[in-house]
Length: 72
Image 1: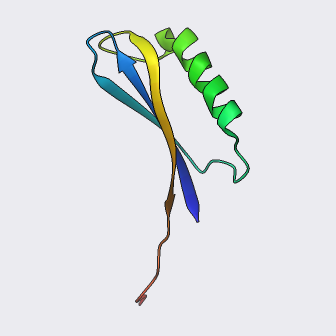
Image 2 (image 1 turned 45 degrees about the vertical axis):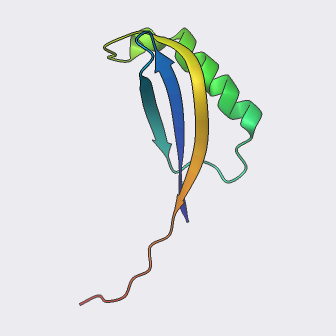
């Protein structure tokens, strides 16, 4: 199953900003995710953002299962 990490942040206008990473490891820990989010906050100049990020909001790992029902 493909898994995507979806991290949500709050910007200076209190709007939510999401950043996703696809094909994450199965054994990714919450501590690793929080550390990654801290790194993103500290280095946000690497991203083209309208407004600066001010805080972490949430993170989810989303799984996607594809069931092939027909193939020619």
